[in-house]
Image (cartoon, rainbow, N blue to C red; front, side, top):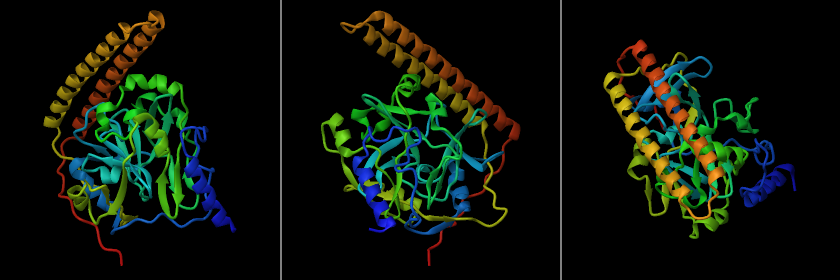
Length: 372
């Protein structure tokens, strides 16, 4: 057996073994590297970076980042929004666990590029060239699964795999992690089961981050958790989806999910012409008022939800009240701190937008063309 065949066999074995107990290193990338395998393939047209610029402009704002160049921030999301929260985890035989987004721009921002955080304007997305089922790192505890978007320093190299470039996944803040009870991991309406960020502190302290992105037969795949592991908590079979590649984001939205299929738009991405810049933002005042009102309503609802849960915990039979009180006080402080951070982030972002002033946005232009 030659080296390439041996490596593929080892990767296949790693996937079969790939449950939450396999590989506990903080930056586990399944065998730590890759032989010189083919670059991951993508179906459909070829586009350049300007395709992302134009197609995402109606949904957010492009800014010049001092380190990463032009980055994009979604418009109209709540202040507590985090990447990979509005959608579901769908299991596919070819790609493993794939994020199926409910957001119109999710075809790009959860399958290409990386997500970063800036205190002045919140979450931002840095475009990337390689399609993947999701670009996340994982954690798991006794009965929870968590994930967090990989940050901009983490890059994919086709003949190497993930390169962390000195970044340690342990440094990702606890509030950026998204956790659900394992029994709800593959739920269609996953957002309904996401735990409050204030509870992430405890889960992060009890687990280590790991990555399971592998290159298998030219495809980037993520088999972080076996179907059997998930079924042990849900007590029902994990639904398996077939992937159907389509030719445009519009075609993907028209046939998002049907008859056990998931529509995917995964074009090849190449560099655009020199000097290409994204469109500018539009009017902001009305949106800022709506965002402030939305944040107030949301924080009141979160506080009420936490208080109700804590009351239920205090009245449960056989509960040791002293350690419960300490944990609940820590959760309350964490929620208050999170709300303060959210308000400050919104104020910073609004001030920055007012300083920049309203700008005229150009209409999106199609940059897709067929591969010859």
